[in-house]
Image 1 (tube, rainbow, N blue to C red):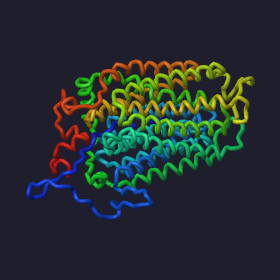
Image 2 (image 1 turned 90 degrees about the horizontal axis):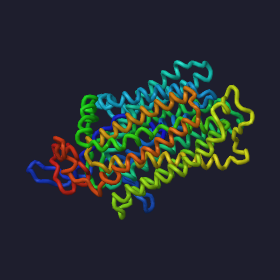
Image 3 (image 1 turned 45 degrees about the vertical axis):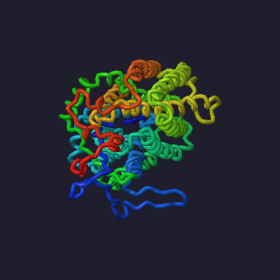
Image 4 (image 1 turned 135 degrees about the vertical axis):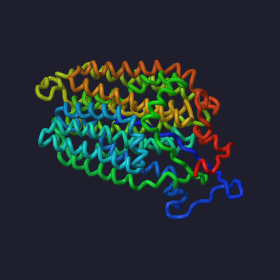
Length: 513
């Protein structure tokens, strides 16, 4: 994703969950269920809707913030060139975005600690509104500087948004449901991109040539991103969130920039094997520039690019569902699941990107130059004979993206239950991912041949899997003991705080209240 995926900065520590508290006499007892509208469950037929302050509902709110903000960003980026015929302004804006994102990751935790989760999410969402507005402005004024500056601003805002998102995403899920929670979030988040893609599809349904998208498309995105920034205020405070079993979750503060840097050193000292995942991190956002600009923006007219974009993100939902649930199958040992997902990704890498190589051989960047295109080069409309093959290829590009991102998150979560380590792992992930994205968008802006960009994508993905294999084979275990999690650190049980450990350890009330 783009992630944009895809975009996502320094990630906070995990939480402590407690079922037991102490009364004034020193006796331990079960927490009483709070009262009030936010703690009422509702039944519809045989189905029970969790209370508003439950982790699933709160994660749903965060997912819909991302549905409306990064989801619209992904929909716009997926059109190629941010909806413009000339991709250079979007290329340079995205290069600025990921450059600032890679740096702000070290400071986003500090800022989020000061302003709070809801403010960070809301402020982060406004950055997406500024970004979308800059493309509407560029269409009428060609204000290149504003567009690039908006990209840099979004890098700062996105760092805050994804830090706040990570505070909840990595804190609320029980240990045995991490894959499902990741897949739920990824599906809702990408559903936003799907809905966003329907806007340019509807607005440009009759545009059978390559053209800049309509004003209505940009205005629709702008309204939705503003709504997303406002929705962040619907979250309840973490201290008021209650699990199904009545236990509370306590959201620990994000690492400051000083502890982030020190934590990186500690990770290298205690867990040097994380280096084996770095190539996968670097590759995880690398392919977007090629897919969005080199394929969708180059070889398809406006309405067909919008349709391709829609099915791309639908397949992201399918991929997240399949891989997220497969990675949590309780009847299969975790070590077996880790190897199986590696084999699946390796097979998909050569099947899907092998098909991409055949497609890429049919055209060059010069053939699709918007100023002087080769008249013999086919620009696909959905009525063009032979369109089905490229559509299927683009669909599976989306499926592959979700599979890759879900697997990387799961591998990190399978290495440790230690909240501090997970925070630093995720910090590595987002920083390295963003650095890779900044480089590839710059290469595309410099008009590097499409085949070269394609080859770099395929090589990085295949190489990343091969270099990660020793970690998959030897470091992922069926479970991680507390002793192993605390090895080479000065931490205590409360620093690690895996949910499963709390079934057998009493956590004193002053640690959780």
